[in-house]
Amino acid sequence: MASAIAKQTYNVFFRRSSAYLAGIFASAFAFEIAFDTVSDRVWDSINKGRQWKDIRDKYIQ
Amino acid sequence: MLSKVAYTTTARAFRASSTFRPVRFASTQAGPFGANRKAAMMWFTKAAAASAIVGYGISNYVLTDDRMAPVYKAVSEASTELKKKAKEFGIELEIPFTVAHAFSTADHGLHPPHYPWDHYSPWKSYDHASIRRGFQVYKEVCSACHSMDYIYYRNLVGVSHTEAEAKALAAEYEYEDGPDDSGQMFMRPGKLTDAMPKPYPNEEAARAANGGAYPPDLSCIVRARHGEEDYIFALLLGYCDPPAGVNIREGLHYNPYFPGGAIAMARSIFDEVVDYEDGTPNNASQLAKDVTTFLSWASYPEHDERKKMGLKTLAISAMLLGLSVWWKRFKWSYVKSKKIVYRPGKFDEV
Image 1 (spheres, chains in turn blue, yellow):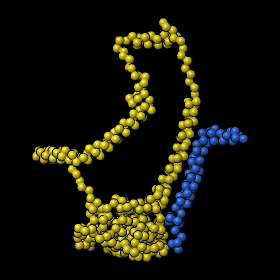
Image 2 (tube, chains in turn purple, green; image 1 turned 90 degrees about the horizontal axis):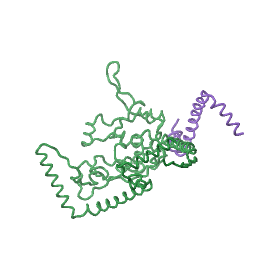
Image 3 (spheres, one colour; image 1 turned 135 degrees about the vertical axis):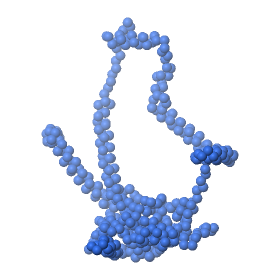
């Protein structure tokens, strides 16, 4: 099973340089989105009630 | 067999050389500080400990001894003489460590205590509700004398006020604009792109209105003062009666946190001088805390983003560090598990 996945991964991503490069670009893109989403959520939860977005509702018309 | 023969002959030739002197400790003394790293570390530890003890002893018991005073005096007088002589020849001689400067807290201002600012923590943003209240304090109290030339109404949008609120705040003041079609300057209500209104048209007017003292611009005041937020907060609330023997000129006020002690600004932050819209208690320390937070934001507007970016950087760096440790161990696993067996061959004595 594991070897089947490894083989499939190899065939899809590592066999050709073009696929390898595309894989790097795509994973960098996906990683950045995921990392930013997670870290922003952590930041917002640490600073709950302190940031402008938390008090904005009180003043917006 | 050629190489073995060659080796043997060179070795023999070497041994036979008359200039060769065997180094006795060559095998035990590999480095300049001992045979191996452990010995070198030991050497450095001992050296550091010994110099620390000797340095401590000299600085505490020898240099501070009263019997050293004549020596210092002699050195000081000699250097003064030397300076005088040099001056006769037209040379300005500066000899370090010969002049004693008296340090007095009255001259330099009392050091403010460290207050537990909640935005000092590495993962905390500014309290934006506090920035908003602080702006109100600035607007209603400080702005009577202090300008904030580098803070524009647009800077408040998304930080402490909505766009509509910031526009309304700006429109409360008239700004000179122009020239119009006929070449005349005219007044118009403020816009988001206008800076905080100036209380005085120029520095001279400000000085004339404040007994010669210039109320500093508050745009970057937190950056511009030692002690930063602590200093501003302590100064705002630090007014008290001057101690006995200290005379304060008419028009000045005593504040121990201000260098020199005599400050032209009178105490301005009192209980209930500002009414907060969000129901926060408006006692003097709360007002001072809020206005200091606002001024801190004005000095460091990038603060929140900077801290968030810093935390992200640390997180990514931690991942990369883990990855590089794994990579190193991965690459070295072959080298470390490799076994090298050396079997010396039999040398033929030729």
